Length: 53
Length: 209
Image (cartoon, rainbow over all chains, first blue to last red; front, side):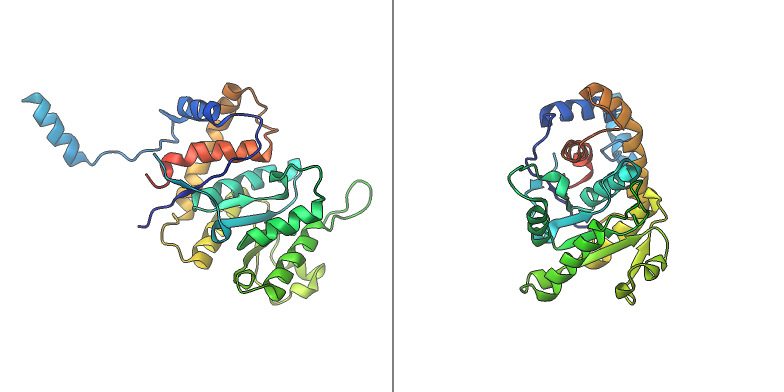
């Protein structure tokens, strides 16, 4: 699947991008709007074996 | 970290819709969907130049956008006894740009919305034969129609299925009250540019990494 590139531009806003970024990270980091896909199980098992040894 | 790029003609979507409180949930869903599909939303609300008249702003925005979403569903008589003609008028400018414009403008593509299927034939019969979609005032249905339209008109395989976007939007909406508290803003009154900024930051991890 081809990647989507986020289109963005500096708009006239009353809040700063940095403040929004911080708030978004705080609210969505552990919430249901999880941004990153989970690792494949195989990789997790391999990593677990390695650390156990 | 997501890659970002400035919006150009082929990635810009002009939104021509009511800007009142009753429409805000649909407008927010449209903005989220457009970003999530890899496009960039533009409306007259984005411009803030007191020296430029409204019609000039709209003409400029239409010229900048290959795609347009035109919602002509707001035909009710207002509390002063008159209907609003802005949306059909701006749709007419979009049609005119496509018909009379240069090669680039002729590539324009539009999604025309009404709340009910075929109702438009009663108030704007010039559009008979044009494929108009009904969103039934349901933001989830609007997400589906916009996703399908952007997919078929742009032929981009990168656009996710509408069910993915609907699920993500529900999660985003759920987090919006907490986000508003953190930012010190009223979640029911977020200006267009601020809302776009919030969506841009919220979906960064969802798009190209």
